Amino acid sequence: MRLTADDGWIGPWPEICGTKLQTMLIDQVTNSGALPVLEKAMQFAARRQSLIAHNVANLSTPGFRPTDVSVGDFQTALGEAVDRRRAAGRTGDVRFESTREVKSDSRGRLHLDPHRPTGNILFHDRNNRDLERHMQDMVENLTAFRVSSDFFRSGLELVNLAIRERF
Image 1: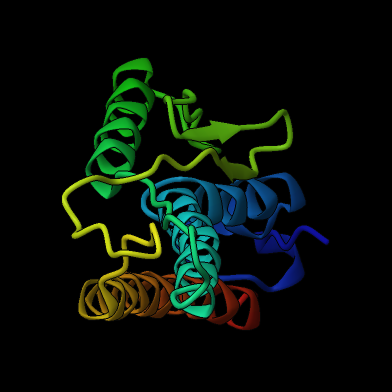
Image 2: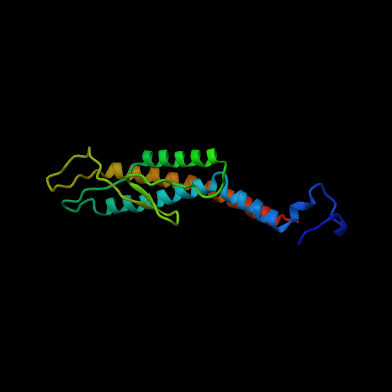
């Protein structure tokens, strides 16, 4: 429905109620700025949390070697994707280019291809465990997910508010 001055609408921007413009505004709010970036960060943290949990669960398994992915490489690749999006002057999904450890499929979902980190002590049972390091990784990863999800929720609340306050 489009309100005009003839319908009793008095305001500086009557065209704001146009369906196409409303859709465009909501699309710009949800697909520009930080929401797509936060979505990728949450996907990465969720996948990595599963990987860390697997490492902790198998910590006492003889011969088990933990795997992980580089957070720094992901952050660099995500930053480059954001820079490319800004330079192109477009909005929408962040086109994440796959790295050695983090792959992006055609639907934008992230998949991890972890490596075996070095530097831990190799025990007599050929296990290279370090519980403290895994716990630190888990807490850091959980914190990254919580911060991203809190910002994402705030962005969605703004969208919800915009929808509820429409004319």
